[in-house]
Structures are given as structure tokens and as C-alpha cells.
Image 1 (tube, one colour):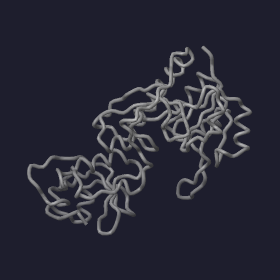
Image 2: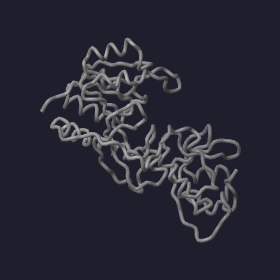
Image 3: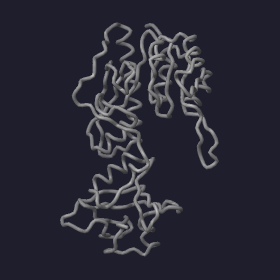
Image 4: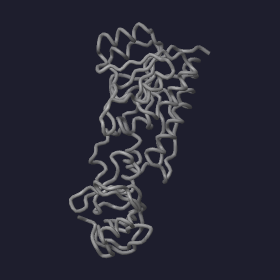
Length: 312
């Protein structure tokens, strides 16, 4: 079967399985990724995972600040790519790029479009308690995840899934979906289908404040925040004017109403706290400026006891 001359646009680590698939299955000309960004305490500039992978495989790497840069456009036009595959690149492609490959620009989006268009579909699907998500291979246009659908694969979201575990599963499913879509496309058996007008929703970029919670929220909502927004921005609240991060927790039903934030029990298992609906067992926490410890150690250190309030 014909191998396409491809360019890959992507940035984070979870896209590497797709990059590896294109490297072995098609003629990969190079990658386009976000410029090096400051990382760590020293804020030294670090390459994206896609750049590191591409350089280790001897591939061309492009890091344009602006996708309409004439020099960048000239450079990728000279490569004559037949297909561009985009997966978590981080920017919307302009018309000048979309018009380059004759087979089009394909985007791999981690939701069942038109649900959860936007930058953070995995996190918002978990936060909203969705039971199912999936992968959409779409033909790109100038909108944000608005192009016609080529192929979709669905995936169940388990009760234990976090954004990290779901992302890993969706990354693996993306390879399967792209392989099938390319095979069908090359045979002429795949036709773009416009997205329906019904069922459109959005998944905006995650902000730091999305991880904040109070005990006035239901326990299940707090737990969904923990699963959705770890490792960043993480789940956190305020305690005596400082940030208290929650690294591990469980929700519990309550048979009677208790004031939100009231400590119901302290044990080696953790701190059981009432919420507006149900209770949450804090297992591992981290007070601002301190190391991560068990909630039981935190309770002992703060001299907390049942009946005290954490709603501070």
C-alpha cells in the first residue's frame, strides 16, 4: 500500500506512539512542535518530548513561533508533504498550512466530536462524569475542531480512571484509529462526514483555579476534580491562609447531614470530612511549603480532632 510523505505536528509525550507509528508506517519528513520552554526551578529552556524524539531519530524539526511565518511556510512547502497529521500541537493551523498537503491535514482529537471541542477534552470528560469518550480522526478546517469526521473509536471511562490513565488509553487507541483511517482512505473507502449541529460542547484550557475546592461542594464533585486535574493544577483548598493540596482521597456516603468541613473521624486511614453531600476521606495532603505526607500525620501535626472544622 502507498506510503504518504507526512509531516507531524505535535508537542507532548502522550503523542509519541502516533509519531512512532507514522515513522514506521509512512515516510515521515519531519515534525513541527512548540518552541523550547522554561522548565524546572532554574527555568532552563527544555525541548518538547516530540522534539527530543525527532532529533534522536534524525528527523527535521521545525519550531515556528508563528505558523504564518513566510520562512516556515517556504520550508515545509519545499518538503512537499502529501499529508499532515496533527495531535496535541497546541495551535490552530491557518489556511496557508491547511492548503499545503493534497491529502489534507488530519487532526487526532481525544473526544467523540462534536462533544468537547477544545484544548482539554480528557480532563473535562472526567470532571463531568462522562461514562464514555473516544478518539476522532478529522479533516481539519480553519475552525477549532470543527472539520468533518473521518473516523471515530469509542472508549469506556472507568470509575478508577484519572486524566493520566485515560490519556494513556486514548493514546493507544489513537494509533489504532489512525491506522484504520489511513488504510480506508488509501483504498478510497473513507469519506469525510460533516459534524452534526447537535451535541456540541467545549473543553477549554485548564486553569490553575479549576483545581480549587471547598467542602461546600459535593464529595463526588471534589473527587472528580482530583481525578481530572492531577497532576496539574492538582486539587487544593485553603487552610489557615495557606494552600493545602490533596494528593489522594476517597468519597464516602453519609446517612445524616453534617456541617460542611466538619471533621468526622481521624484514623491512620486519613481525615474523614463532611461535605455538602457525603463525606471525603483525605488520605495524602501537602501544606504549602511542606512535603507530601499522610493526612493522618497532618492531623497529628496540626493537633486536629473530630469535631474540628477544616472549612477555613
